[in-house]
Length: 223
Image 1 (cartoon, one colour):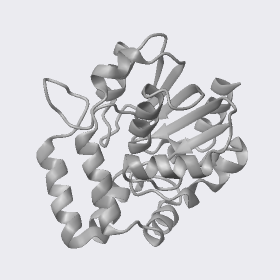
Image 2 (cartoon, helix red, strand yellow):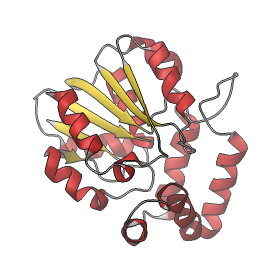
Image 3 (cartoon, one colour):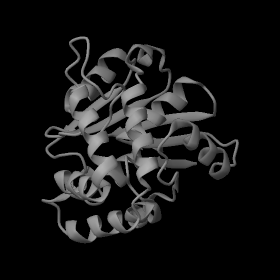
Image 4 (spheres, helix red, strand yellow):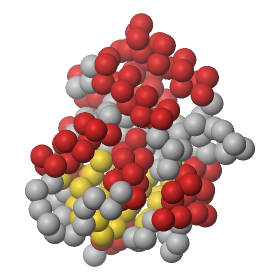
């Protein structure tokens, strides 16, 4: 069974083609880890081996779930990958805490404007970007749920636990990713055993920068 965990603020409705090609289940728009677990238990009703694809915030949830050994997870495949979202302790793979705190403050005041600018920051140069962003904005989570997602990005730090990962992991990361910089993916690879990193010219949304590419790569990885 294949399961996709999307990123922050993202609806499953933009993945209709991806879902059709990979026959995956999508955990739709989780923003706290506890909410994610509830959605997982409600959606993934099987004892079959599970292949997980995580994007951005979804990559953190995918790693945390796997490290907790809760389910029969066979492989991990990540993009926009990070195990620690914030810069600290000389870690270069995240964003400054001040940037995250500013985003939280702005979401409290103007969440729709903030999220529109957030989506456009990594989708603006993509074909049909206006259509994708409209779908995202039409299905935007509540202000409360968006703030929960940012709090998880601030709180969860799995970097020191990555050495305990014991399943096959592949990451395909954009070299110009501004949301989850390439250094975060490199740190995961450096700390895990037998994992693979493929760098791709692009930003945070390789799904749409290279249509069909991630679907094919995931199917090969899970075969």
